[in-house]
Length: 317
Image (cartoon, rainbow, N blue to C red):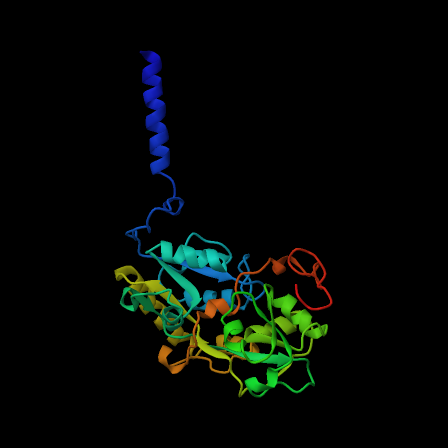
């Protein structure tokens, strides 16, 4: 009888421990929004410009914006309970799983265009921070393509998983998908590809990081232009959060240090009057530069891909 009682206690304790697991441990159904005044923000890393350790341009921009909102202490980009940096696909998965969360950097229109959001009315979005633009880059001093017909017969490195590949397909180019943004730059510089697709402001920051001259591009050939925003599941808490984000963006519009940060990154359009001011192609801004390896730890793998292997001569990682 005693043993049976102990067994019942064990089963009860085990059952309680299962119930107490974090909500994301249950894959059966989306988590129900919690009564919290500070929603989760899932930030998706893709390497140097948005690193897991909280560094990088997009983390810095987030820090600037979040610093002006109520509850700012909950959103330290260097590591906090409410601002969680994780690989691209995991961040996106967690965002759609957690109905009490937001995704950054993102774009509502792009998520809808990519058929990831079925009901836009169930989401809310911030004002655009700036427009991110995808261009086609060649080595400094060379003539960049000015129209898609110019890429015929060329080899092009583009971000793995990006809609860029779909948009460039069918124009006679050899397309090579590459995970890491620094690897892609080094492939261009090393002559392994003729052209590299890249996002501005990211590309300017990457070439500064590797201490190389900015590659040439034709500003008139824009493959994709999309706003950088915070996108949240819609509820009273997230609507208040987005209102605070928008107020912060307005404050930053007259902040010299913030504007200098954008200018240094070669952001052509700093603050957008509305999300509708930019055109979105067929995919999410996040997919333009998806999750990659931890370059933030150093450049000891320079000239190699994420597995540490050197790039083969034909350019495929």
